[in-house]
Length: 315
Image (cartoon, rainbow, N blue to C red; front, side):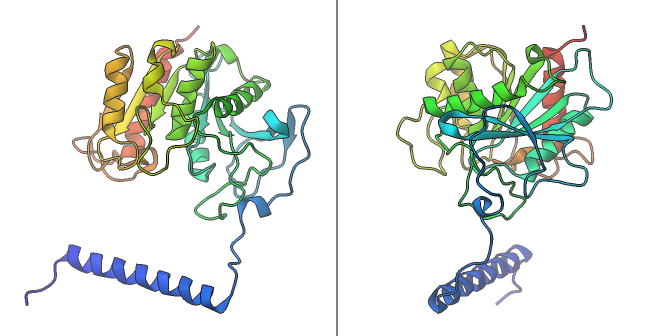
């Protein structure tokens, strides 16, 4: 037989590693040994119900060196608490300084969302990263940030919008923030719920929806009772919207974005070519046809910053 190709060897190594991991898990389970990996819920004590907006220490898992300038918690429905970190700009893009609230998706708050908030601060905005629901049973791995005491995940149903509204209300307590100059950048479910909030309320903040399920349930997840999708509510979505979507997204398929844009022609849109996947805001692959050194992550930041600056001209 001929020599195995590089791709074939890589695939064989990957399969071997997966078998090794699966075998290790099976052996551990058969031995009755429990995993020692802490969960997000075990890393921080359950918070007492909050009644006021409160500054708190850096949460477990979040950056301590080079991290947010401040962390806060604020009351949310059902006695829960939302959480937000603030990155202040050194050189604001205009006065008063606009703010960008970064929303995580279904995987919960992670350091990559802090990275994005920091990048917006470096671009001249007040960068804010917010935890609008908690995942207490998720393991503290892959840069997970704990927000114990946060609301439970409710998807795009009305109660999920209420939880996000609690986070946006908390942003209004930040002394540096002018809420009339606030934008939302939501990844995946974060973008979908931001759009549903724009439909359900009088909210008019500019919204960047990245990799968001807009027209039907995402491929990754079962349909939740009460879930709604922005395609069915385009007529009531207020304020400007930028949709950025990867053509190789296996979770929120690009056809969802196309259907939404067709139903709402006023929407700005960018479609990123393959291999742009669901996580292109942090994807380090080279952006096809762009200058050397341009990645999907850097292109997303540049495109979103340029659009956001148009929404907040200098005063």
